[in-house]
Length: 174
Image (cartoon, rainbow, N blue to C red; front, side, top):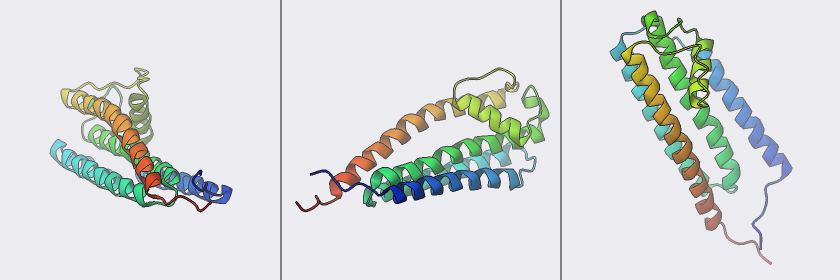
């Protein structure tokens, strides 16, 4: 027999929570104090952000496996992981651009940094904002590689967690 499907109400709630999560993350990005820092300070904060992101993803994967509706839980996890990943890079670009405006072709506002991050993530790269310094080019290269890893590993891991979660559910009675 087919496993029980979630109700329309539950699906709408998951989608609403996902949208609210994304909105809250973006609001936090725009409200967070992103003071110009020396390169080492920015690097440390960036690495701490990556560690927090990995910890959140591991927690989310475990939650998917044990969820009643693993597919819906995966939607919520994806809706928080990808925006957090992008906003982490955007915040880093904002901070390094404020500390050293010569690192990019234009000084990056928060909107510019988010725009740049998304164009790199989407592999569009319009060319209106480009890294000029070696440090900025290294960071953008790290983002490009991480983009591929995040998309491949995160999607694959979440699909595997959904599969495992579904296999753990008992079959409904006939």
